[in-house]
Length: 428
Image (cartoon, rainbow, N blue to C red; front, side, top):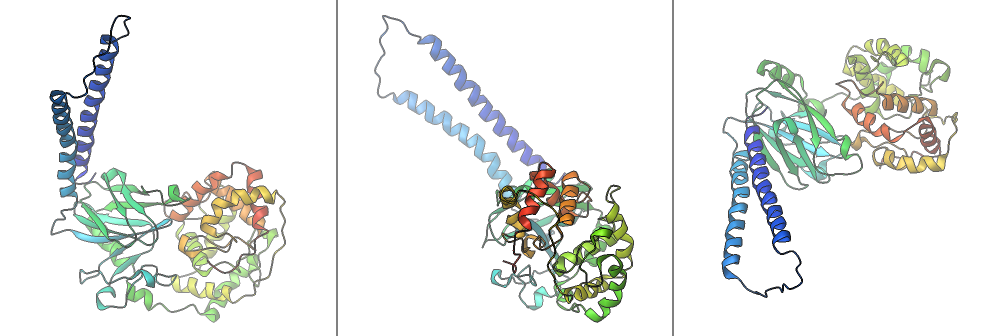
């Protein structure tokens, strides 16, 4: 489904035929030797420490076989990294366990980046230079590419070894911290294709997935025009708690006047959650990416309230008001085996932190100090696919996979019992 996928398959087929022929030949030779030189009482072995004729034949045949394996691969590799002059560029940034993307702006050049500048407010490590102001930053793991247009994929990693792979394109390449790698392709068919990491990168490696949508050029241009630039993100107004108070009036009816939550109305507490997480969930509710499953009754109730928020600035203001509310402790309502839950939580802790404090870099919210009944319900929803299966909820997809570790309701209660013991300190 891309320009160079045929050559990759041809190379694999050549490898199969060469290694297959050697496999058959070796086994036929072994069968011949076993029969021809089977044990006989009067037979004695012949000592022949050196046979130059045999060595020349073996060396020659091995050389031919290795050349037959390497030559096609080298030719394909040469084409794989020989980028056409008319190719446009996109940078792929990998981290545990997330994909993000960057397009050059109208000037056609990427701005400079520095690893030491990477942080919550600067996830790409952007440097304030002229070339980077119009760079388009995509923090979602969904990438859009135009059909029938060559593209150079520039790859870098923030932390450990990753490998950007789109199996349908027969395209993949390692991402090495401190280095920039690349390859190119031309998508030739419209559709949605899964991105996966093909290099073991940690406990949530299997959940490091994304999506490439191949669309017509007009749709791509419209999508790219809607994405924010580095300059636009840097110029965003901070949230205004006073403006957010007006939006919170409808939230307070269920979540409480101080965002403390209300179990009787199945409304979880909002205070204590990170602003980036609250903003994302409100956007998912508003866009219909959450709360649409027929079994997610309470999520369906949230959708019309989120729809009342007219734009992103309203969401930012609302979240700013919630952040100003007092964070009071909550009482535990569930019981379970906290010791067994601690063992189960090792998987959760790789993203949410050892103390359940939440880590923005892994897109994992705070768990410690949240309502345990709500956490239990969400874990069951993730495990059963009621939440997280929407095509636009890409981080939800990761949680659907991770929640399979909890094989039954008792496991859910046990891990929640352990979370109830966590302090939930500051972000690591």
